[in-house]
Image 1 (tube, helix red, strand yellow):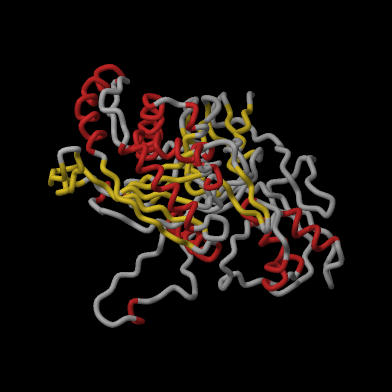
Image 2 (cartoon, rainbow, N blue to C red):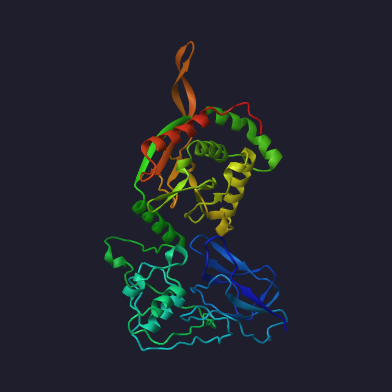
Length: 441
């Protein structure tokens, strides 16, 4: 009978593993080709894995919460019914020399040295179930584990890192272990664990509700704190007269909708000005590695986007300077739609070199955004408002009604000084104010 392996797919640059969050199908369930069978989460984005074939699921090799590597077999599908016999599947085993490709049993096997269990409760670091298992079996303390330099995604300790630590003379290390990463999951969903240090309602006065952050909010929280700890933030503000842009968009938006079938927003127009300014001041399009500045020759423009869940994500328009205004508008609309429908891929949100965020969407006139690491600058655009303004003419000054907005440019003072940061945001405003009202799409 035909047996089809379902493997964890490659999910973009630098993504080596994913967490199994929810199995949408169980052993014995029938699936259609391209039907989603499991939800996975990386440190970049949530996504689903589709079935490569029609059939019946006969084996699942990981439980919810497990962290398989890209290329690992996570399930087996039989194309000829429920009674198909399971086949042996090659999966990595932990050893001091690396992964083995020999078939292994579905039951984990390990050499045990009777060490006391390692308590991960008080650790803020992420360790995969495989790394935790090796640490427990080898009697590696949490302190030792946190001292290991990780080479995995986001500097996580990988299987090879911990095995290398053992091979290099970890005191009292036992015999090298063999751990099967594939295992038969129980059909019952494990009970959710409550951290020992989770706050209780009784700890607070008054009537309170305790809400645990979801996975994405935890990632955002750590990312924002890390950014503030990494970069000394400075913010410069400029007010821009965008009357010409407002009038031009009002004139062109219906024509654009009829021609392209899409809305024309202010976002691509502002992006176009940012791209021009980056070309004028390329040293805002950099990142910092120790005492070195890495100048990015590609302009990959991120756009901070609010999700329906209330969380934030930053899709990226790669090589944004290669698009004209119509192309930018289409890219903005496509990425915004994918974000709203949870269809972003890791590639869609990786590789950004500069970010724009629109706080004006929520009626805010300005903001002090946090830099999206490892970038060194971010521009926040505020709400466009009608304001009384002094207008200079050859016949003299007079008061008129103009459409204005604030631009807030936050930058990393390690490498971007006030002169560069201020000139850059002023140049963006200059491009916006000089917009040609007679421009054709």
